[in-house]
Amino acid sequence: MHTTKVRVRYAETDQMGVAYNVNYFVWFEVGRTEYMRDINIPYKALEGKGIFMPVVENFCHYVKPAMYDQVLTINTKIAELKAATIKFQYEILNGVELLAEGYVRLAFTDKNMKPINLKKVDRELWETLNKYCEADE
Image (cartoon, rainbow, N blue to C red; front, side, top):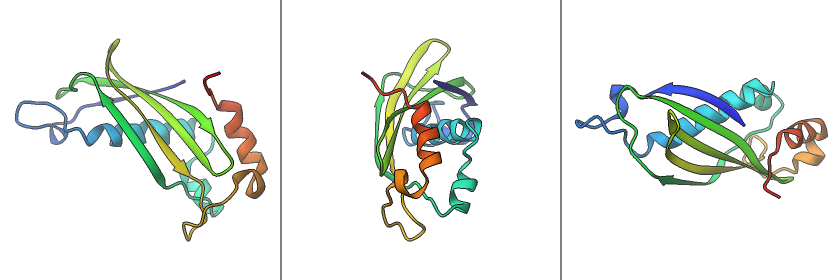
């Protein structure tokens, strides 16, 4: 599990200080990007190899609203790894209080958005990602 912190900015909220629902997907991306950077696989390096990861599915279950100026914790994990897709799961918390949970599934593609088999294209990268995968048994 990887942890990242973000502060809810004024621009992310409505007049009552409640964060707009779409921001949770932005925070998911922050968690995913920082996770990948921390395991030494930054997106820029992937794209330099011609490997892209477009979102193909996402889901968020909202439990409680995030409010202006709260410091949120984004917990991120790789929940599933297949040859052509990867699924990240997230929890967004205010302290210990769960605000939202969800997932994003991404495909592995070339620069033309044609799906690729990561196991065949870059076995070392696939093995590294697999090492971090925390799939439920």
